[in-house]
Amino acid sequence: MNIFDRLRIEKPDFVTKIKIIDGDLDQSLLGLSSDDPGWLIENVNFIFHCAATVRFNETLHTATKINIQGTNDILDLASMMKNLKGIVHVSTAYSHCPRNIIREEFYPTPITAKELKNMSIDEISRANILENWPNTYTFTKAITENMILNYDNQLPISIFRPSISKMLKIYSKTENTSDLLKEFTTREWSFDNENTKKLWLSLSKEDRNMFWFSLEKFDWKDYLNIYYFGIRKHILHEDLSNTKKAVLKNRK
Image (cartoon, rainbow, N blue to C red):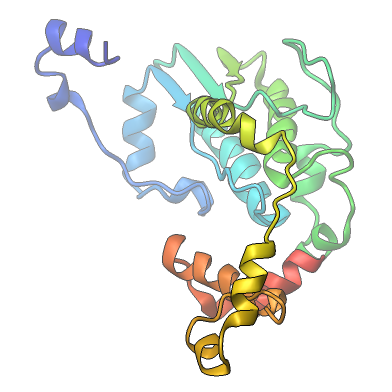
C-alpha cells in the first residue's frame, strides 16, 4: 500500500492543504522569500528534514554549507515556530561509518560544526580533517548530528538514520546475476585454438586484410581507450569535454 492511500481515503481533499514554498539550503536563510518565514512560524506543526547534498565527492565547503549550515538555519527557524510539535532529522546509517558498531547514540567528531563553519575555503581544502570518514557526505552528517545536541533542550527533535534502501534492489539483482554466472566466473578453462591458427595461416594476404581475426597484433591499449570513451558517450551519455579533468582527478 502506498503511504498516501490511507490519506486519500480519510482526507480526500488533502491536496488542497499542500503549500509549496521555494527554498534552497545552499542560500542564506534557506533562500526563503521575505513572507515565507512568518507563515512557517505561525502554521508548521512538524518538520521532516530530508534535504541534503548526498554526493560522495562533494567538496567539503559545499557539503558544510548545505548539510550543516542548512540544517542549522532550519533549526533556528524551528525554534521560533509557535505550534511546533516535532522534528525528524534524516541523517544516514553511515554517519559514523568509521566505527564497526554503531549504537543509537551520539559520538564525538574531530571538529565541531562551529569550528568547521568558521574555517575559510582555503583552510577547508588544505585541512585533512576527514580522518577515517570515506567522503564529505558521511562526515558532514556526523557533525550535523552533534550540532543537533545544542538544540536538544529547546526543540522536540529526533534523528533518523536510514540505510540506502534503493541499494537493496540493486544488490538483489547483482546477487541473482552472480548465481546465474557462477559457473562461468568461478571456473577456469584452457581452450585450444590450433584449428583457428591454421585457418589464419591458410588465408592469403588479401583475405587476411578483409577477414582480420588474428589478435597477434591487436592493440589492447587502443581498444580499451576507445571502449572507455564509448561507454561514457553512448551508454552513460556523459559529456566528454571534461575528460582531462576527470582523468587528473582519478589519478589523485
